[in-house]
Length: 514
Image (tube, rainbow, N blue to C red; front, top):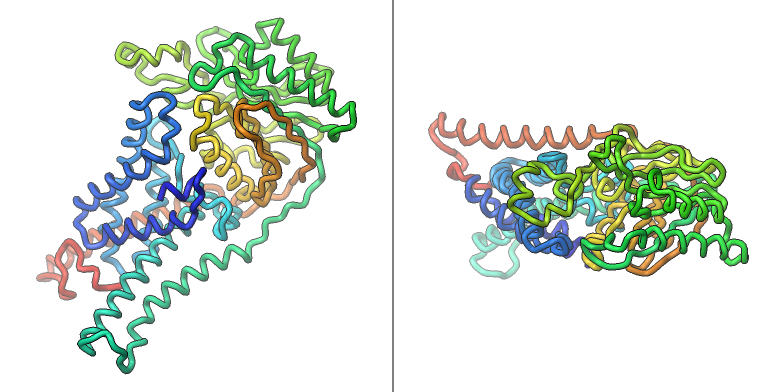
């Protein structure tokens, strides 16, 4: 199933993987299903999160195994609900429940590698505008469940045929037994074909934008090892943009976006950094959204900011990242962990949490800014969807040349469709991109090279059904999963109290019913 995700993008393997897991779990006890779920979860998360290995193999394997723990209840739940009629729906709802919990608990969750993020250029993608990433996950899992259901029904029809004829030859009237399998295929066709009926509007007031990728001095954890090197790179590339505009080589942008941490010095306290940024902004002559690390007033913490820098008035409005990454930008249990793992000494101060959303005026439009991993969180992106454009400022130097940067681009593509907005992805070392409201990639950089992207894109004001519904689809589908679990748990107890399972199965579930 991990091959469905970037950089491989073998997208049909996501529902196929769901189908195989469902078939493997069907008929098992909840306990056995839980352990099989964990094994399958580990086999999924270890390769899909291989980019974490740039931090260290212990961090990579540890995070993957923690994520696999969420497949314990998923495996147990699928083993239970496949005893119920209509089980493809209930198994799909369980995937929503798993992602809901994994994306919130603990420390705010880690919603990476959701099924929806493998379906950013498929017939299921347009559904994001109606129910967001949760609906795309649900439908991906539903297609997988229907594949499993069809396989079970076809096998049952074959067995019935053999029982009637005693051989593999044709016999009168076998088609009735194939109706369940045909119904499953029809359901898949309806789900897949339905996406083509959902419009993905791309109209809007045209605005010319520029995305700057300045590059970093080195790959890995030491990308900021050279003082001011990252800032100098972004200043130089911005001045190059200004020169190309004056030469008539590219259109004059109305706004420019720099990446997260583009300034590796606090411009509020370092006059040299301030002057370098201010000169570059004045040279290009339009507002620039500058990513910078700044000190809190007491100096105890760091803020990860996106700062609106005007060529006339200098730094103005700003956004502080609201969802800092645990063990990366702040350290839970600091007193204990720093004594056990010396690598955590690289985090001498915690990042402060922002308190408001990143909707800001940037030149002629409003932008909704999220920083780095925040693009994976439904709420963080939803809270800034009122912006005419959405911005993802990110620094992927630590994870360079792994699967994580292209996976982040895939998330941005889904968010563009979900909220009907152009998304500007600015990365220090790549991958930077400009994504249209229909999820199409207008421009995309290579990694670890300086890059300038200029494009005219639509600035939109309309909202999508996903904007208006918010988190409701996710909670409704998770409640559906809980109801199915209760029904599956109650059914064996009821059979026991009435003298056994008349359908001929044990409490592990006979699964003879469809």
